Image 1: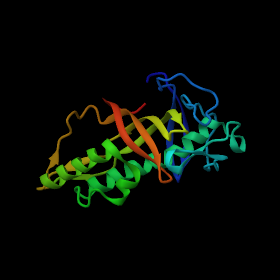
Image 2: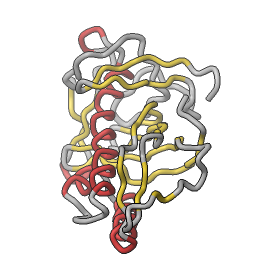
Image 3: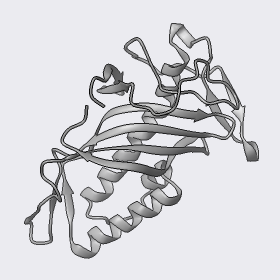
Length: 218
């Protein structure tokens, strides 16, 4: 991911980095119903989430919000896609931090069920159970530092996101309060691709693939 261009996105009072250039799929300039969109290449700082111009029907009568291909409020369609996905993806990591900071107690929490499904929900239920059994507890928080929408299929309600999360502020304590050393203290960040599905009005993380430990997020 060297040589990557990034821009800042202001969202919910936090500043994130939106990375450009690390998706592996070729770009499609105009996302629309039943088609996919390639890497986002937003050109401006976003300060408010635009309203979607239409809903795309999904099986079972549900809908996934689709951006206006012409850009709402002067924003490019790919930037609108980023704004639709990003808050839900940030909620996913908030749910992870919450349950691990609680030592795995209460899993699966409502926040977990609202932000993840399928294989990823099963994964974090098992992780929470392991924390609880071993008396582990997380301090600090995992922080998403780069976020890039990849393939988007509004007709099917599926999407992918390339991302990097930083664990530099995270410490894991055992039942006695002693620090559990990280597997590799030189690589406290993780790059991966998340697979999302749209259901009940939310984008949920269904799986994460290609996890690669790195020294720091780009």
